[in-house]
Amino acid sequence: MKSAKQKAIGIFDSGIGGTTIWKEIKQLLPNENTIYLSDNKNAPYGQKSKEEIVRLSKKNTEYLLDNNCKIIVVACNTATTNAIKVLRQCYNVPFVGIEPAIKPAAIKTKTNIIGILATKGTLNSKLFETTSSNLESKPMIIEQIGEGLVDLIEKGKIHSKEMKLLLKKYLTPMINANADCIVLGCTHYPYLKKLIKNIVGDTIRIIDSGQAVATQTKKLLENHQLINSNEKECTTTHQFLFNGKSSILEDILTEYRNSITVEQKEF
Ligand code: DGL
Image 1 (tube, rainbow, N blue to C red):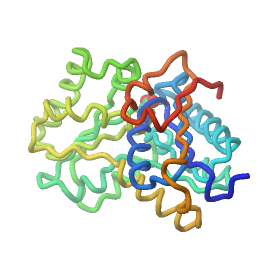
Image 2 (spheres, helix red, strand yellow; image 1 turned 90 degrees about the vertical axis):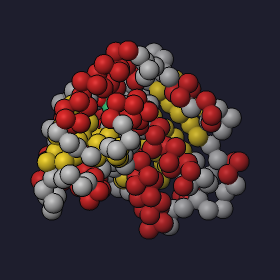
Image 3 (cartoon, rainbow, N blue to C red; image 1 turned 180 degrees about the horizontal axis):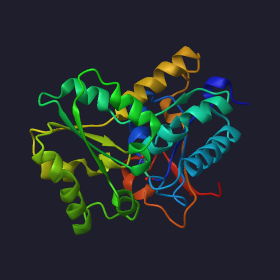
Image 4 (cartoon, rainbow, N blue to C red; image 1 turned 30 degrees about the horizontal axis):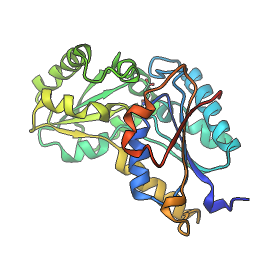
């Protein structure tokens, strides 16, 4: 039987987006086992109702807990901003969530104008509203729903013409308004960083929350004495599960192919 420390870190997202968080966690915590759920049968979450996002988040959490996870990382801004409160109330396990990094952006901006690209579900959430209205420096925030971006990413169309056109449409108002920081408020979007940089140039900072989530995961594991410090890195397991017809998980994780397994499962 596995000891509490040897149990896996459970991570979920609507698709491949949370792998941007998984990569940070793997780097910071190389001795930890992980189970990653890509609920791509139900992607995207961004346009769904709060009730539906809560229901899907509970389903994913229960699957991870049934598979013996010691901590749950909600690697999805949409699920965090709509469901993490309920998850914390319902399950007796530590949760780490991800929210758009508007606080660090508000500190870094010189023009006091920041842009944020995120899903409708995140931008319309109560949690996002509270966080953004509580910023001390009261920056001007240009919100943009990234409609269509997650769909294209999940279809593997990251470098498509369609993607470039959408990004140009979404980012131009931020550039014109003199924003000097753009927050990527969806875990899928770091896969678009290069394309975004090509559009906005070098003077605008692109900010995401990946590292902060990994740091918070480590802190919580330490606080609960759940760090798996004794295990050798080569013996760790990293399971990736998806429930749609197919997934591009393997394509985007090729550099890790010797240390991970990718499988289709019902959940
Ligand atoms: N990757 C997710 C997020 O961070 C979900 C995007 C979606 O499914 O719409 O918001």
